[in-house]
Length: 117
Length: 115
Image (tube, rainbow over all chains, first blue to last red; front, side, top):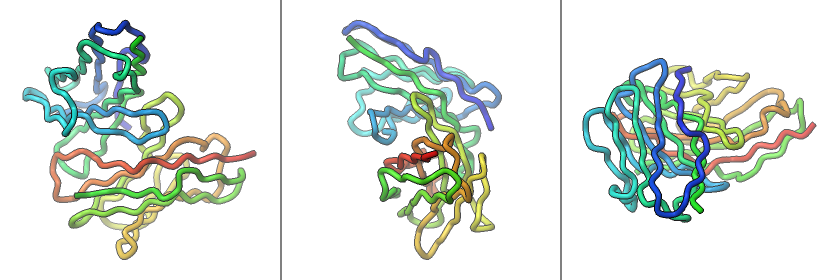
């Protein structure tokens, strides 16, 4: 299957700092990327949908000014957690889809474990 | 709105025995259905999907799933479980009419295969 990478895999930062997470589709062009958040022993919570060249669509309850998403190219989307606080500590997973059709498979990155001290 | 139910938080099975992880869905129109597996501290790996055609779908690592429209189910199965199959399994759905919408996931089922 297609490969999606995320960087970094793990980050520890101080409260108040900003953290950028990169998501790359390595062997396909992703017109759409998704960002999820996963709490321990829970399912994935969709945060936002990112389309290349346009503004991201955020899910209800997700602060767009806190979680900045940029999808500048067909192979790269970034999520920046601004002014991070301990409650932002979580496992962040990105997903990329090659086409815009409903049949297309979403492929997931390996995730980024964010710990805010 | 679409939804997915995975009624079991945990499934335990002995190595070599068949396994089933249950999934039911609710969606308007015809569904596209997916199964993913997640190993500890890792992202999700795609196992298989049902789009149309044969109700029995075969996927990676010997897994298969059967689409049952009348029961709105898409249970994941494997004839003979391996210890290495122990992981968290997610069922997901997207309506066929939805275009660009993301998948909706169930809460996950933790599979434990005991040697």
